[in-house]
Image 1 (tube, rainbow, N blue to C red):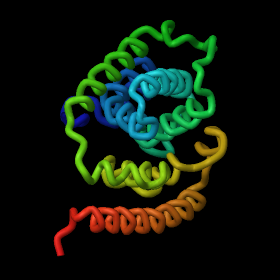
Image 2 (cartoon, one colour):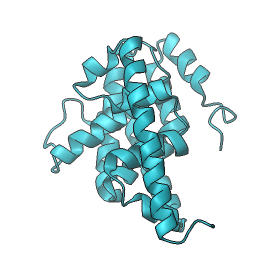
Image 3 (cartoon, rainbow, N blue to C red):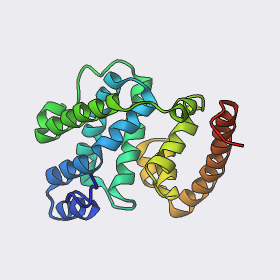
Length: 211
């Protein structure tokens, strides 16, 4: 389902945001991009249960941070940035926090929708046959896998990929200048080409490429 065709595109998120209806903006964003973002988290963690926990953290970060979003990138790009940071934080802290500053159970429809997205996407992921090329991807580094996912599978612009993959606290990532983003985007493009070449070599060695 195309998010825009379904009435959940960027313009709908922005319209709700501009009206000050942050709950609708958040739920619209999750309906539009929640499935693909959960899939992105699963691809990094290789564990759907752990990914569900991280996705809950991502949904909370989305809810807490939406009021301060400045639209210096697309809502989709911002969501991936939040997801990548939530994933990295989850990896550092394997055990769930005992308490949340804003428990997800207190944000109503957001928590229910996050749970629904995880359930539906997990079911979908479980019914897909893993291709041999997908298996080869797992021989690449996590960075290379993430880079291929964001560019090839998600088709994010390079500037947004630069923001998603930027290091440092989320606050500093949000504040990156266009010049800094373009510099990082150029670096990621070069790494992307190398990752594609490495994947092609693996595919050739596995006999997946014709002469």
